[in-house]
Image 1 (spheres, rainbow, N blue to C red):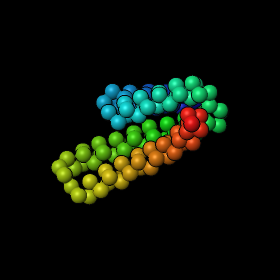
Image 2 (cartoon, one colour; image 1 turned 180 degrees about the vertical axis):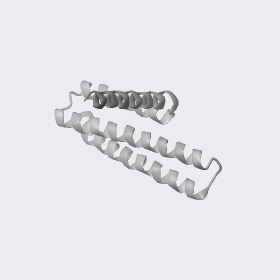
Image 3 (cartoon, rainbow, N blue to C red; image 1 turned 30 degrees about the vertical axis):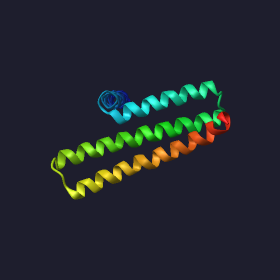
Image 4 (tube, rainbow, N blue to C red; image 1 turned 90 degrees about the vertical axis):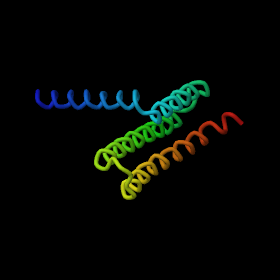
Length: 119
């Protein structure tokens, strides 16, 4: 049981370390966090429902998670093949496409929540 707790503690430590690294070094994550904070504040201002909060937080987490994975894939690809390579470029484009899908989902969620409240 002690080893399990120690293992989970280390896993949490490395997860937080990775998240802080992303926040400090990645402009895309920084921008998405700024937008996330804006929409969290908007949620309080417009007094959105619990279901709306659920969708909003899910959308925020999905975008941040896919952007994090995209960054990891890009860094691995650059490490494996630092020079330009067509196949690596396609891999990186596909990874960025995942971020695009999650961002479109988040945008639709935001429109559904806030468009009726603003207009």
